[in-house]
Every structure is written in structure tokens, then in C-alpha cells.
Length: 298
Image (tube, rainbow, N blue to C red; front, side, top):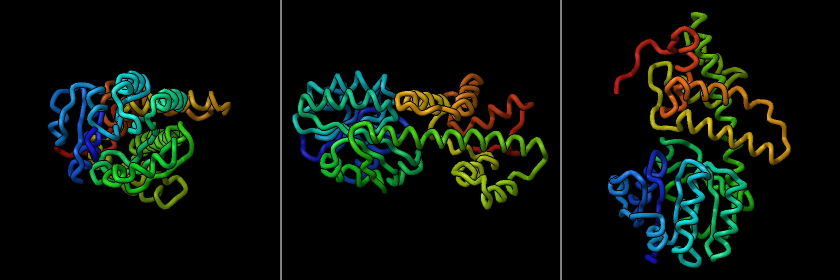
């Protein structure tokens, strides 16, 4: 096993950006992705499969869509992983699945951390992600050299599953604020309001939220901030939140809104586009409303 070598499995929107940050920090990165050529694009050494990544890296980062993908990948790499190596699941995944995989890894001497990330593509590019981690605190401390190039804040949330639990709770609030703000922006447009002025009012009033502060000031100019979480993945995250609350015995009273909104976006053809396009989906069923006058080119 090469010293100071990190493996990254999943080199898409977020994984590719994190891999590039590690490469730029002088760390050797071994990467695997089903899409040929992605490893080379971010400066990583390509690996044929997850097992090869595990044989070459002391820390293995996973950036994958969900637990249905994470589970077979982890089970494929564990037999090849060295004792004492560390697997870090940066995906948004089911905490119940996470704890099962943690126990399987522990049985073969591999440390397993769940580490939800927040901040989107822009923070990934800058290395300023927020990470919420679950698992052994010492294992997390030992990979500080991996976290430093990619994250500005690393929070140890508790035992295995705690990181992914925190991520689902955060993502649910993100989904609610984005879907609700999109609806309000469409309504504001239909009412004939100046949306820039409306946002100024909201952002100095009680309706202020992350979407109104950081997303819609750009969206109303035609800049959808492409490259972030898609509507299909947002729907998946809310569904995971509903499953989590069911396991916790907490009533899920507010999930229907974002599920309907991002489900609508998916059904209208926006599923693989950034979740900010939910405002266009709501606009479509409101008579073809767009909250911007002219889209920004490029």
C-alpha cells in the first residue's frame, strides 16, 4: 500500500472536484469511475475497479449516488483493503445501511467513516466544504491530512451513521427552502412584482433562507448555478429523510412539498439538471412562467 495515497471512487460532479483538490495539494490520487477517462481528467491515476483502488490507497473516499451503489462497491473493495486502512463514505446515504457497512469493515480491520458533505460544487472547487462525520473520532483525526485540502469545517457528529443522519436533516431543510422559494418566485412574477426588489425584502425579513440569499439573486438573472445537486438526487435525499424519520419514530409532516416539487421537476424533464431548475418546473405548470427575462449565455 502506497503511503500518502488516497483513492477516490466516483469522480463525478463532487468526487471529481475533491480529487482535483487532493492532486493539487500534492497527494497521489488513485481514481475509479464507470465513465472512462474521468480519473485522468482530474489528474488521478486510473484504477480498473474498486478492488484495485483498495490495494493501492490507504484512505478510500466514496462519492456515489446512494446506498444502493455504495453497498456493492464497499463489499467489492473490502477483501482487497489493507488492515488499518480507512474508507470514508462522502455520499448521501441511508444511516441504517451505513452502520451495517461499518460493522462489516470493522470485522476485517478496516476503519469506516460516514462523512456527509455540504457546500456544493463551488465549495468543492475552493476546498471549503463542510463535513459532518460519523464513526471513530480517532480515525477521523488520523485522516486530517485528507480533509484539509477539501474541507473548511469538519464536525465529528458521533458514532457510525451520525454523519449521514446529520446530512439528511440538513438536506431536507435545503429541499424545503429551495422548493418553497421557487414557488414564491413564480408567484411573485405572476403578480407583476420586481423579483430583485422582492428578494431584497425577503432577505431583510422573516422569510430569508439559503435559497433566497444565495440562489435566487442569481437565478432571476438567468444564472442557474449549474453543476450542483440534481432534482432527481434531491428527491432521493428527501425520500431517505422520510425513511430516517420513520425509523426514529418522528412524524414526517413537511416532506410532501419538496417531494412533489422535485418529483414534478423530474417528471417534466429536469431530473438530471441542477435542482434550482425546480423553479422552471413550477413555472411550466403555472402557464410557462420564467423568473428571469433573458437567460445568461454560457
